Image 1 (cartoon, rainbow, N blue to C red):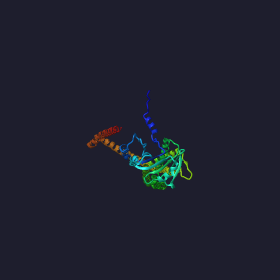
Image 2: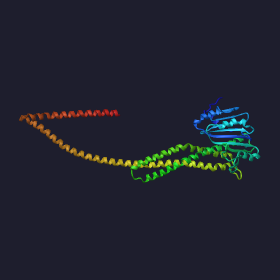
Image 3: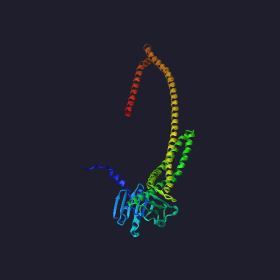
Length: 426
């Protein structure tokens, strides 16, 4: 019997198995780098990962991860993130440089810019701790020392040494190699996500002065809007507010991804810190104290900056709305005055029309009396024999009828053209 799988079922299973760390013995060295890689560098990374790799006895490649190992005990891990890649190389301490140089050289030539690189040493004997701390060059004044996950002890100064790597010494515990690998993975992910989260802080520092300037300009405009009495300035104020809004959107566009990423990375780092269950050692700074001392203020600063941008946008919107309402009210008042003026003009035209109509009655009476006079004189001409008056009297009525017919035809033609134009519009 077969079942019908959802298209995303296999992806979900693969996602849950992603980022599994390799087993870590109690006597090995681990090199890990986190590199920021742009889209234009992804092809170079693929080339370096696949074509330039040193020999491995077992190789597994997936779209966003790869793992490999050799019979000599070398393990390799690669993970692709949204904007970065993490590469890890685990080398048994018993191997000599001739056996490991090719792998280290491959790791250090990885495309991209390093945001964090760590060299980790694991020990089984607590008596060798002091010796290894000195050999690794860990600065005692900056030493962070604590216990994580019930038994594993870690030492580091979390600085960058001359070779470009940080240092981490791990010792102790009766953990299995697989469990030790998972704990080291948590420690590394804490540091990796911490550094990625801190990248948002320089962005805030870079754009902070610009936002200060925008806030000051916005406050000035708010005062001008509140005190403005000249209607001609409203359009200018609205245009200047639109410029402020455009500059604000440019800043939000430039910082949006970085600030959102900072929030996400900081939350993951906090989760990893809680999962490590850090127990401090007396007289030493712990991993929890070291992480929270700067990460929490940086995260809060970025969050406040993002909230600040949102509030400025809201203020711009409110001030622009106030201006819009005032301009709209002014336009309505102008329209009201225009309508009142049109009403006065209409009343004046009505009065003039009434006067003209009164005069027209007089003119019509005058012409009607004249027409009657012509026809009366024409009738009287039958007995007197005046041909001129008789002719004028005879043609008066035909001329009136001819003019009436002509006017009716012209009126009908105009009405017909008007109907055609109305049909075209419809």
